[in-house]
Length: 116
Length: 117
View 1 (cartoon, rainbow over the protein chains, first blue to last red):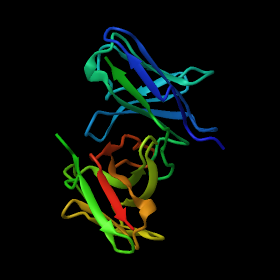
View 2: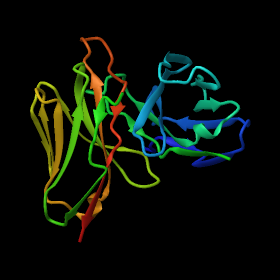
View 3: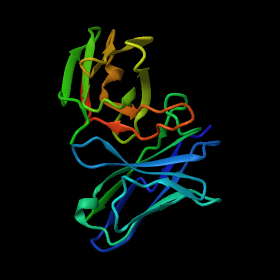
View 4: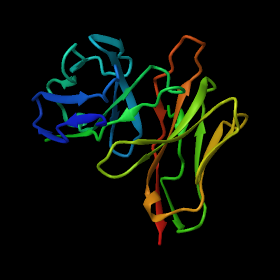
C-alpha cells in the first residue's frame, strides 16, 4: 500500500510565478490536510479538505493561496504570485477520518518550495 | 503565540542510554498529544500518542508521560539507538465532544536527537 505521495519534491519559482503542489493520499483515505513548515519552525496547519469540499481553511493565507481536492485526481495546493516568504516545506497528510485519536494522519515526504 | 513549545532545539545521547524529549503546552483545550519523528528529506512519521485521560503510554522502547497539571509531556526512548537520530515533533489536538472532529494538529518546533554510537 503506497503511502502519501507528493510531487514535485523540489520546486523553484521566481517571484511572481505560480506554484502548484500535488498530493495523492493513501489508498482509501478521503481526508487530506496541508501543513507548511517555515525554516526553523514547526508544521503549521493550513487547510483540510474532503473530496470536492474545503472543510477548514482557517490556516491558509487569505490571498494568493488556494486548495482543491477534485473528485478525480490529487489534491492541489496553488500559490499565485509567489514571494520569497512563501519559501518553505509543504507537507500533505491524509487519514481515514477527521479524528486523530482514532485515525492517524500519515504525512507525505513534502515539497520544498524555493522562491528566488 | 506558540501553544506547543519544545524548548530544547537539540539533544545528544550515547547509544544505550535514555533519551528524554520534553514538550510544554499552554492551551487548556488540548486533549490529545502525539509525537512524530522526522528524518531529513522525509515527512513526519507517527510514533506514539496519549490521551489526556492517561498519564502514561508505552510502546516498546518508547514511553510518553503526560502531566496535565503542569501542561507538560515527555517522550522517553530506552535504550537509544543510532537509528533514532531524527527530529522529534510534539503535536497536540483539541478536545472534542463525541461526534466531533479534532484533526487540527498544533506542532512544536521540534528537537533534533543525535544518538552517538
